[in-house]
Each structure stands twice: as structure tokens, then as C-alpha cells.
Amino acid sequence: MITVRDLQTHPLDQVHRLIEPGPVILITTQHRGVPNVMTNGFNMMVRHEPALIGCTVGPWDHSYRALVETGECVISVPTAEMAQTVVDIGNCSGADTDKFQEFGLTALSGEKVQAPLVGECYANIECRVADAGLVAAYHLFLLEPVRAWTDPSQPQPRLLHHRGDGTFSVDGEVIDLKYRMTKWQYLL
Ligand SMILES: Cc1cc2nc3c(=O)[nH]c(=O)nc-3n(C[C@H](O)[C@H](O)[C@H](O)COP(=O)(O)O)c2cc1C
Image 1 (cartoon, rainbow, N blue to C red):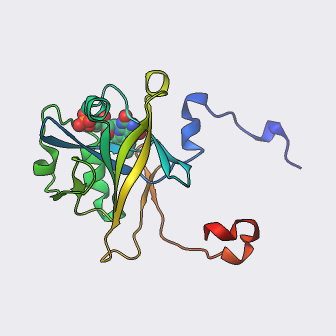
Image 2 (cartoon, protein in one colour; image 1 turned 60 degrees about the vertical axis):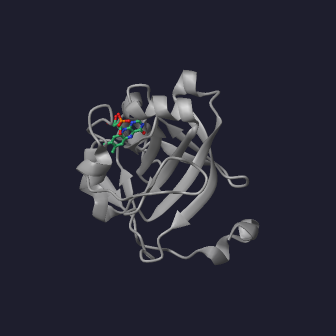
């Protein structure tokens, strides 16, 4: 029988490696006419309706100021095919690099916000900052989607999930358990 002595302790500053967040996303902003994009792994859905998404964006990111000052961004969802670019985008800064140019990304105009969509991504969600009350304490922006787009040419996207240490898992396998979701039929 297993006892706690059979387990090993896990560093508290690495618990994020145990509870994987949502897929790695890109967050685009547009500040004083200049578009930028960053990589974000700490994000989660907060509410279904109206939809609310939480993203942590630190003040060390050039994107932080753009997000604070414009109150707008686009969440772009990349696929596994973009993995290396996604990591590279998160290892340089819009402070000194035009990342759309550097990485050959296609900036598309959305409808509701100034920040660009990323044409190569599977999905793009135009967002407005709904609540900045947790930014000072946690760098946590609560974002309300105001328009969402998907690319019909990518019907079965494989999304990237950061394991917290520079390694990534890739999803893709679908297990259909809708018939067991008896309590949550209205969400299906
Ligand atoms: C896989 C990965 C995940 C990241 N997740 C986050 C995150 O959740 N929050 C954050 O503030 N920065 C995160 N970063 C770091 C930013 O993407 C990085 O600081 C980037 O250079 C910011 O770009 P900017 O200065 O143009 O805004 C991540 C980077 C990588 C590679």
C-alpha cells in the first residue's frame, strides 16, 4: 500500500509544473501605433458567460504597459507547428524588436480592438481589460472577449502546453465523453 513516505516532495515554486495551465497563447497589443506580440503560458478561463479570461502579464514585459494604457489586446492561439516561433517570441522584446517583421507574422485588423490578430494562428480572440483590480498584486489581467475568430483551414489544431521548464506537450487526441456530462448538458 502506498504511504506518504513513498512520495517525494515537490518544490512549491514549481507547482505550476504539476497543474498545467491552458494552452500557450500569444498576446498582441498595439501601443502608439506600434504592434507587438508576446508569449503567455499563465492563463485560464474564469467564466463562461459573459466569457472572462485571466492572463498574467508581468511589468518586465514591454506588453504590460501597452495593456495597461490601451486596455486592449488579442489572444492568439498558436498550433504546435508554430512551437519554435512561439518560444522565440517569448525570448525577445518589442522594446527593441519588431516581432511581426522578425518572425514573418501576418498582422490582421480585427473589428473591436486596435491590437492585431495573428493570421497564422488557429484562433484569435479580441479582448478588452474588464478588471485590472488584481494587476497590482498578481499581474493578473481579467480580459473580456469582444470578438472571436477561428481559421476554418485548421479544423483539428494541436495546441501547445508549457510544462514549465521549456518542454511542451502537444494535445490533439480527442476523447468523446459527452454522454457522461449529464449535469452539464447545456454547456455541450
Ligand atoms: C513558453 C513561455 C511562456 C511565457 N509565459 C509568460 C506569462 O505567462 N506571463 C508573462 O508575463 N511572460 C511570459 N513569458 C515571457 C514573455 O513572453 C517575455 O518576457 C517576452 O519577451 C515579452 O515580450 P514583450 O517585452 O515584447 O512584451 C513566457 C515566455 C515563454 C517562452
